Amino acid sequence: MILVYVETSAEGIQEVSLETVTFARTLSEAGNGVPIDAVVVGPAPNDLSTELASYGVRNVHHASGDDFDLFSGAATASAVIAARQVAGSVVVMAGGTNRGNEVVARVATRLDVPMAANVVSFHGLSPFVVTRQVVGGAALEEMRLGKRPAVFSVAGHAVEPVPAETPGAGSIVPLAVDLAPEDLLGRVTSVEGADTDDADSLKSARVVVGAGRGAGGPDGFGDVIELAELLGGTLGVSRVVTSLGWRPHHEQVGQTGSRISPEVYIPCGISGAIQHWAGCASSKVILAINTDAEAPMMTKATYAVVGDMHEVVPAINEEIRRRRG
Amino acid sequence: MTDVLVCVKRVPDFSGEVLLTEDAQSADARFVGYTMSNHDQCAVELGVQVAAATDGQVTVLSIGTADSVEQLRSALGVGATAAVLVEADPVALGPADVAHEIAQVVSERDYGLVLLGNDAADSGDFQVGIRLGHELSRPVVTGVQTLSVDGDTVSARADGPDGREKYSVPLPAVVTVMEGGVEPRYPTITGRMKAKKVEVENRSLSREPVGSGRVKLTLPPPTPTNAEVLGEGPETAKVVVDLLQKLGVTR
Image 1 (cartoon, chains in turn purple, blue):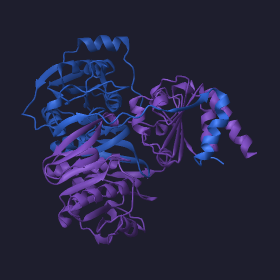
Image 2: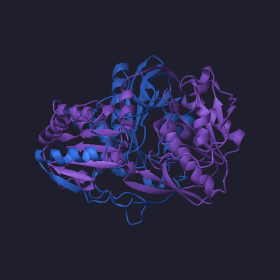
Image 3: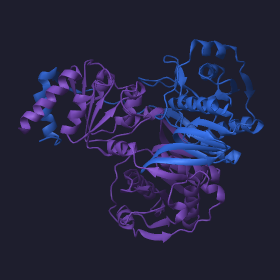
Image 4: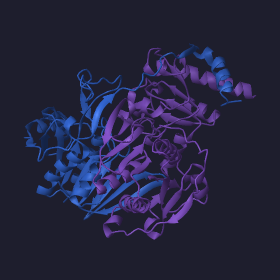
């Protein structure tokens, strides 16, 4: 049995969880079709059952009630462990988000087993060896998970979320969880919608226009913001931009910022350090604009324009406006 | 008064290509040097802020080679007043080992708050803080960007999937920190001078490490470097917009 911790938000099931269930199906096939169950903690979207069924999930163990209305890592881990006992799982997985990593780390700690973060593939089942991202994805580690259950998170964008050819039942199974008082000590007390809305829009944007040190200063972002608006996209920036205080951190793309996978990423004045590449490597098409034709971002991109972003981007904006009349 | 223990890790300062050692057990940083994980730098900053606001002290701890003193001195230069080095080969340690060694130090002293980076820039394990809290039977909050201490409570803010999440957790507690809430301060000349004078406490491992399960490190296939150059300068705009239309992101 494979158990996947599925994250939900006000918008529904997180895409990374659907990626994780897709990854779980590969594992299931290697294990002669062992069933995949999901565990959902807290308020659930209406189409939870239908969507997870379409991804091949058999049962959806759902822990709900006042204790789960606001996130507590310890309480969520208790729910996952309870679901594992019900389902008899030998594998426990989550998406490689901050929350997913936290929950599986807590599960592994309490079950006294190892945990592998940001797994991208697996090799055989006995021994169970996974490959996971380290150094922000610039290197990979083969890691042996020698105890059961095998507990790990799946790196974002490691697989495309694909519905199953044969749907599962997606049956909702209410989950009873005995919480200890300490499970609720580190619990969220309130949530304010704020900057993270912007970070979420960055992660899900179809077009991202990036800007780096080449912007030159806090006033150097007007043209790239306009290009993002013209393309219905979002601004993303490199770490140096946020470190210098030119733009807020929630706009940062990279190892310690958002990981994006837009249809088109247009990095302007970004050299392409590995920490930034870690956040944008999953972009479908990269169109880099930089004065340095040899910058890593320019050579790794799909398309490159050699030039000063302060000259090239306004010209692109003008051409788009001209064609739109 | 809240005494804070901040745990920091010496990590390779990669910005370009990553190289591996011949035995494929670690990243080879001989040509790039070392630094402190970004999240750890923010943890030091938050620790210094909390100590200043509560008349407490900051102790900084690192587990690694003797060269990790460099990162300890960096933290001492910005306000930490004591430093502990648990000398060990970091390749031999797994997250449970690191958490266990930190727990030994914490259990001997009265640190109300333990701060760590959310994950290390090199190994990216995402679990040392959680294993530490479990071993110490303390609550753990992860991914925190700002925090303050009032009496016996730490108030913290983290970014969650639905917005800014607030936590209010009783001390003693363990908190893991993420970049983005505070700007790490630079050391002053006076701070650097003071840092040099602090005697670093040296310890050795308290038990045989269980290890990380690492088989080996590998490098991903290199990203193709065959970008199609569309042209130079602003006159490329027409070609670029043709491409954007072809890609279906503008009309």
